[in-house]
Amino acid sequence: MSPAHIRVLLDADGMRPLLGTIPLLADGTARLTAVSLDRLWVKPGRHFHASYRVTLATETGPLETQATASLLRSIREAASPMRLAPRESRVPAATRWDVERSTALVESPPLLLHRSCTVVGYWPGIRCQLRYERADEPGVLYGKVFPDGAGSAAGRVQHAIARRGESAAFQTPRPRAYLPELNLLLTEPVEGEPLLDLLRAAPSRNVVGRVATALAAFHALGVPEVDRRFGPADDLAIVRAWVPLIGGIFPRLASPLGSALAGLERAAPHDAVAVPALVHRDFYDKQVLVGTSTIGFLDLDTVCQGDGEIDVGNFCAHLVLRALQAGISTEAAERLGEVLVASYRAARPAADPRRVAWYRASALLRLACVYALRPWWHGLAPTLIDESRRTLEA
Image 1 (spheres, rainbow, N blue to C red):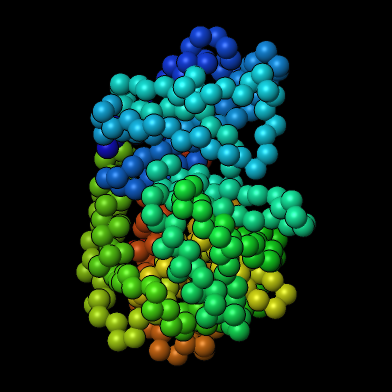
Image 2: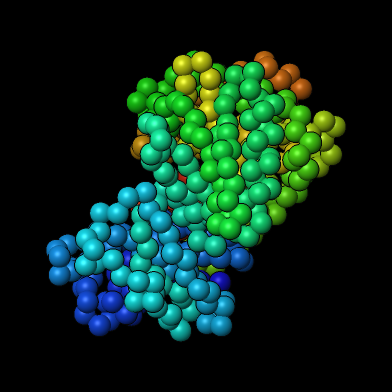
């Protein structure tokens, strides 16, 4: 991934002429009037995708939609674009363009560009998440389109977790059906209010304690269908991939990132775990719904066997991130993190606070890299790096 090419994708104004090569824009069918960077999906060394909010002037009036850009290793790697099905279409019939006219290939940077419909979640080359209104009764179903073959395995794991966790203090999405011809896994919704919204409105020690207790119950599940192992070395490998990528794009961050990574490497715990837990491995506020009597856990695609402390540390790191995003002191986040750790250890006494701290430091350093790529949060990166280093020194 060339740093110069990545900088182009991060510059919404710089992308305007490249997006203009999409046929329906190039031939004047529609005119691009506004563009802004919306989301990024990045796996260092594997893929780099950007999504843009765009406004088009069309014969039926202004149209707000999305465009995506996928950085390619070479033009020869351009894949056929996927046609995505949104929950509902508000696009007038006259402006529903086909895939061919909505896609363009650019040689430098090597990009695949296409205008796409809005869906619940879209991770190019990884999965697409859809929301369906039910016709037989009130309610919804959620669908995920996986890469070939992956959906069936994900469905088996989610079904096993849902079945074994029926009497626990948490809920997970229960699979309804798997359609192999579409690689589509359908699941039932999980009830509850988004934890992120609750914490923004009124941070509650009680709610955080409930989340910690539910997380400990999740970690205690025996699910032999999950056989993948993940430990400190694997977590460190992810951060090691991020640091040189961000240091190459933003040279002023290279030294502090390198220093923080060196500290993380020196403090890395051993990989051996006597009794591995079932871990979520992407556990933070957006993955949690708070119900009256249960806690809902979403997006189980990364579940594995490993240290339960990784989920606790990652959650605590995100509490710090949210405080910084809100422009407030991290002291309240620290106190909520202490509540989470104490409540978790009360339910799972064998948990190691030193491992929690290490995983928290690792997550903070990874978040510093991730958010350095987001122009609107780039300024948080130095503070996140400092927070990572401070966690190890405490």
